[in-house]
Amino acid sequence: MSIRKYIAYLRTVETGSITQAANELGYTQSAVSKMISDLEQDWQVKLLTRNHSGIEISSDGMVLLPTIREIVKDYEDLNFAVSELHGVQSGTLRLGCFTSLAISLLPEILKDFHQTYPNIQIQLMTGEYYEISEWLRRGAIDCGFLAIPASNDFETTTILHDTMVAILPKDHPMADASVFPLEQLPHENFVRLMEIEDYEFNRLLDHYNIHPEVTYDTTSDFALLSMVEAGLGISIVHSLLIKPGRYRVATLPLNVKQSREIGIAVKKGFLPSTITQLFLQHVVDYTKDMGEITVIRH
Image (tube, helix red, strand yellow):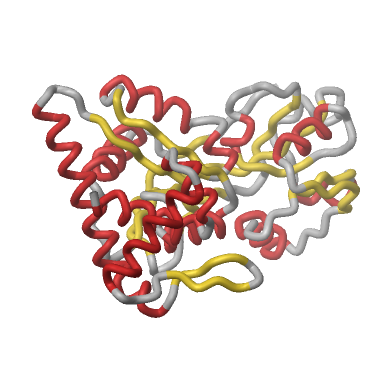
């Protein structure tokens, strides 16, 4: 069946790897290679090129990709419509999300979505904003959560605001204070989260000309929380990161307000699949009364 070949080729392009596409689709690597080779022979075009870094889509493949993607989407929509006729709404949603949302609010959203659509499988990929953006552009995910404003490549819907707060060790002298003054930062050991895109935090520091004494750098949200819990320093984070309450830290509002706008995005110019549209609406409905997320915990 040609549709299987289209799907195999599409997933290979989206993942950039025949091996990964084969693993996701449940085929052997040789089977995926054979399906792509069959398409190339049938159409008399080269769909992939190979180089030292792996494989990439050819110029002919780029021309055909939008049509192939549309055929696969229509096929998935058809399968979903047929499943509805049998009273079972089934399919797969590929979702991108950043860590703080993935460990806090997202599980609640997915649980609620699963109760309504128990036969829809979710494939969750977590990463930084730039990674989620790239996955959306490539078509590796159907939709993703991003900070707003996002690239003009995407259609976005704002769902909530996430306030920045200070986190301190429980035995810190200011642990019981009502607010944390930014002016105090240069006098503290500071644990910094090294993110490629940390616009909100950098904008906050630049605006108030604050230069914290960075004692520790980490790329891990969880390491940062553990380091503050252990008394190695303080930090400034988004409320969503500490919403689960798994770490024993004191949480204080800042003496100035700073928050990020969070939205859910799809690729502009492409009609989302039926399943994606269902999830988008579910997220909007679930978060419509949340407004601003602020977690204050001592």
